[in-house]
Picture 1: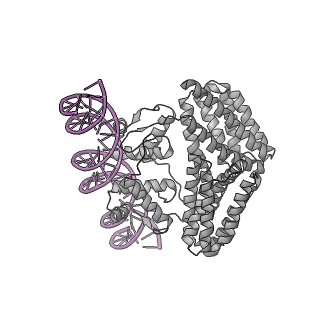
Picture 2: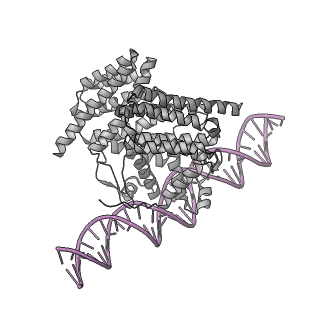
Picture 3: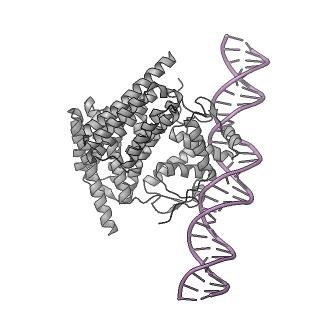
Length: 219
Length: 219
DNA sequence: TTCGCAAGATTGTCCGACAAGTTATCATGA
DNA sequence: TCATGATAACTTGTCGGACAATCTTGCGAA
C-alpha cells in the first residue's frame, strides 16, 4: 500500500475554492457565476472553469439551466423542508444504530467539546462550523463512506441556507449544546429510540426556527 | 410556467449512454475507459469525453486516480457491505415513514405488480430492473428529491455489482416477490417497525447470497 | 402597443497543442 | 544477477482559440 500524497490539481483546487466561497457567502446567492467570470478571477482556462461549475451544480451548490449562467440557489421553504427531511432520515437512523452500540467515538466527543467551547464565545461562523462537525462526526463514526458522502451533500446544501439566513442568531448555542448532549446521552444509554427522537427533535427545532425566520423575512 | 422540453446536449447524452453501458456490463469492469477511447467511439471532443468520465466518477460508476485511466470498479466484499448498509439506512427509515402513513403509492403498487409479472418469466435483466424500480418507487413516494437522489446513487452502484456477479440466479424471484409483498403489507398495516424490519431482512437476504457467491468465486 | 429582428452575452462543442505524470522497456554498471 | 537510471509510449491536466446554438434585451416597424 502506497502512501497517498495530498496533491491537488488546478481543477480540484478551483472547485474547493469556489465551494468555500459559496458556503461562506463570499459568492452571494442570486448573482450569476459565469464561466467567463471564473476565468477572469482565477486565470484558468474556460474548460477548467466550466468543469468546476458543473461539479458544483452536481453538488447542489450552484444551479443552472442550459445556456444560462449558474447561480447560487436561493432555497425556498419547500427546499428547506426537503433538506431537513432528508437529513433527518439519515441522521435518525444513524443515531439509532450508534445507540445499539452504545459508544460515542472520540471524534464525535471531541467535536461536541469543541462546539461547547465555541458556544461560549460569539464567533458565529465557528459555532455553525462546529455544529456541522459534530453531526458529521457522528455519521462518520458508522464508518460508511457512502453514507457519509450522502450526508455531506445534504449538510453542505444546508450550510448554504444557514449562511443566507443569518440564522446563527436564531438559536441559542447553549440550547444546541444541550440538545447535542441529549443525543450523546441517549447513545451512551443504549436507547436507540431515544437517540433517534433526540436527533429528530434537534432538527425539528432548528427547522421551525429557520422557517419562521424565512416567512417573516418574506412577509 | 413554461413547459420544459426534454432536450439533451451531447454531453448529457454521452453520460447517459456510458452509464447505461456500464450498468449493463457492455463496458465490463476492469477494462480502461480512456478519454481517447470515448472520443473514438462517439466522435466527440476530448473535453466532452473527459467531462462525461468525471461525472461518472462522481457517481461512483467509474474510478480513477490522476493521470491514470478510468475503469469500472470491481466491488470487493467491503464495498458491497457498505452499499447494503447505506441503502439499508435509507430504506428502512423510508419504509418506517411510509408505514406511519399506511398508504402505498400507486406507482409502488404498479412496480410491485410489474415485478411479479417479470418474476413469472426468465428475463433476468428485466427482473433486476423491476426489482430496482420497486424500491425506488417506494422511496420516491416520500416525495423528497434529495433523498431520492441519494438513494438512486447507491442503487446505481449496486446495480454495478449485481451485473458483475450474475446474481440474478442467486435469488428466487418468487421469494423476492414475497419479501416485497411483506414490506407492502407492513406499510398498509401501519406497522412501522415491521416495515423497516421487512426491508432490512430483504436486504440482508440479498446481501448474504451475494457475499457468499463472491467468496465462492474468489476461492 | 405588439411583433419581430438584430445585437450582445453566455454556454455547448470542437480542434490543436503542450506540460506533467505513469508505466513498461531496456541499457547500464556494480 | 540485479538494482539503477534513462528512454519511449500512453494518458491525463490545462491552456488558447474558434464557431455554433441559445437566451436576453432593446429597438424599430407595422
